[in-house]
Length: 487
Ligand SMILES: *[C@@H]1O[C@H](CO)[C@@H](O)[C@H](O)[C@H]1NC(C)=O
Ligand SMILES: *[C@@H]1O[C@H](CO)[C@@H](O)[C@H](O)[C@H]1NC(C)=O
Ligand SMILES: *[C@@H]1O[C@H](CO)[C@@H](O)[C@H](O)[C@H]1NC(C)=O
Image (cartoon, rainbow, N blue to C red):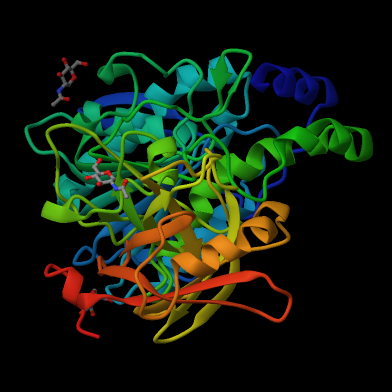
């Protein structure tokens, strides 16, 4: 995909436009008394709109651009470029960093667009050089204004993630850069390489990464799949993102031509940036992610436990705890901002005394202390057989508070119409079950965000005016001594 894009682009002599003030690009950078030319520009943002260029060995520029050495420095590093234009997400991220943080920071940009706008393999080759230039800038800040590298946070998108890694590994000395965040770090030519040839946990005191587009296409994936930080987040499994329609690519090309390819590729890739921007919004909008083996297990609701601080917060406000081994964290998100959802895992113990497995599609309504959610469709992957516990994950867009009641409903099922009599006799008020149909023996619910655990047991069954079966359940606190919620 990348090389196809490149060739198309070169053939078209892509236009180059540029938003910040045009200042000479080529400057001599002196580090260690060695002169070398750099095409990388370093910008600082006083206000959100325009960048102000700083240069190594130019203390006056640093002052003019409003650098405050008592505040941390967050540097944004963009990725590979098709058209030589700095993408819109950069200004969105700058604005969010400038406006949303309670603790203000210096916000900068590493503009290496002339080196990034190349055939992909050439741009990859340039990442190491740009990383060294970033390192030179940080060393100079240390020497000139005693600004510690540990107060630096590099946020690199795509190839920019690896630029950050090279900055961290080439800075020299015993101390490391404070933090590096990789936003869907680029995969091609980096996947499977040794840690010194890509972003790795060694490159900063703390390294986190958000993987959003790791679906393979002809043996390559745009975003790197392997964990490369202390914490690696895989929203929605990391391979592809909701609201991005890869399969519609060909239709889009027919409609919109070449532009459709970049838009389609960018959708999932760039989602990592928008998840990060979302994490800067006021408290309560941050998403929790959970350790899990893979997305399949996560979707089965098997991974909502945050014991021993195993979970973490996606994005800027992550709890910074370096790990000896990369931790892979999973979460579900919405298709647009605000991306946060509330995760619930359900474990339902069915006892099916019938000979045939029970139908697996039903709806569940949840009543909580704050909100109720009606008729959430559930489909279990296997027929409900006898005496078995099924588990699944449900995500809600609102916080319903503490769960008070669950209602199940099997609708429009001929099977159920036939067994109505049976069911009626197995869940009556006050009498002993007949044990000849389906029993919902227990339901255990875990809320990921609050870590609250509830257990339910059957209390009443009834049918509505259409003769459809409804079964309501209430807490059965007496049955579960470990249930912390008293109702
Ligand atoms: C200074 O440059 C020389 C020659 O390039 C190199 O060997 C040396 O390691 C550099 N020193 C530092 C502190 O970067
Ligand atoms: C630098 O930041 C500190 C801490 O927020 C603040 O007290 C100080 O006034 C700032 N300095 C300048 C020159 O803006
Ligand atoms: C369900 O299985 C458990 C253990 O496998 C067993 O102890 C219990 O009696 C079974 N219940 C029914 C109703 O078959």
